[in-house]
Amino acid sequence: MLIRTGDTVEVIAGADRGTQSRVIRVDREKGKALVEGVNRVYKHVKRSQKHPQGGRLSKEMPVQLSNVMFVCDSCNARTRLGARFSDDGAKERFCKKCGAGVGQISPAHAGHAKK
Image (cartoon, rainbow, N blue to C red):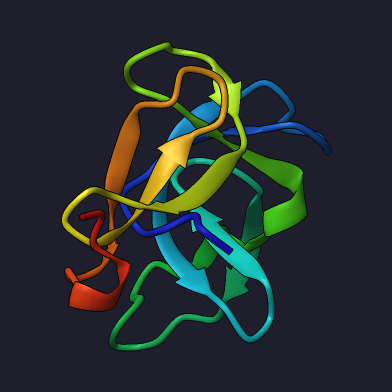
């Protein structure tokens, strides 16, 4: 799972298919991501001090990670992500279509540096 919080993703399945938005939170154990403005549901709330009006609240629910694809900033296309070691030995994510580096996964390690 190489998708992280703050990434731009596109929904590829479900009622919100084709929607591009930002990832708010990722739950790695359940394999789900909370995407901004996607998979909205109504929660019926009883009147209380916190919600004096009561009624229906609209909130986002998590989406399966298999139903979203990363959108690359440089080639502006939805793509898969890969992991590779850079020249200094740091592990980074990269776009499989254009090869651009997307972000660092782990810091540099001398054993993986190219000589």
